[in-house]
Length: 218
Image 1: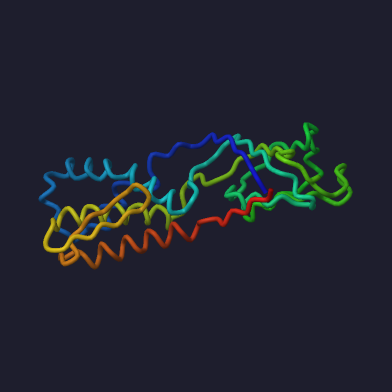
Image 2: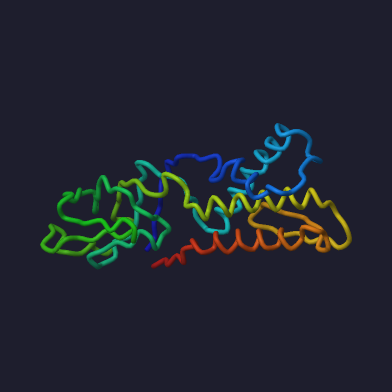
């Protein structure tokens, strides 16, 4: 299945909050960052890059896409699996058009969590989406009105790991971990190295658990 999407998103600045990061860092002496306002601003400066890193690892975003439009290839079966092209969960379908002819809403059913659109028996299309190239257009809302909790935590862990790496400084051999364009450079022998490594690994594993294996038919 090949699809082309026109994205209209909620444009979230961040999945987690400064408070989420501070909760992870409670118990650590952060006085070297200055006062509370300075520390919170430093955390805010990291949020955008960490969010982009989570999206890159997941191969998708976790925003809400309202009034989006997806153009995809007809499958030759009674269903379209939108989740296979990374469009999930599907919250609502507003329109379905096949070769410029709109399909009545009563002729299909939506399985939102699975991201599947299925024609009902006896539909005007003969029960199948005809095989074609970008011949099916779906108008829909999809995504997350609030990011999943584990994704918000993954972003917070990335930022928390960065703060701990800066707190420890460079002592001895230095490791550098990249998630997308986001990089955390920390001392492999530092006092916080084990926590940093665990948080980075947890963030990567969580994001990758949402990755979609995209299948393209040509």
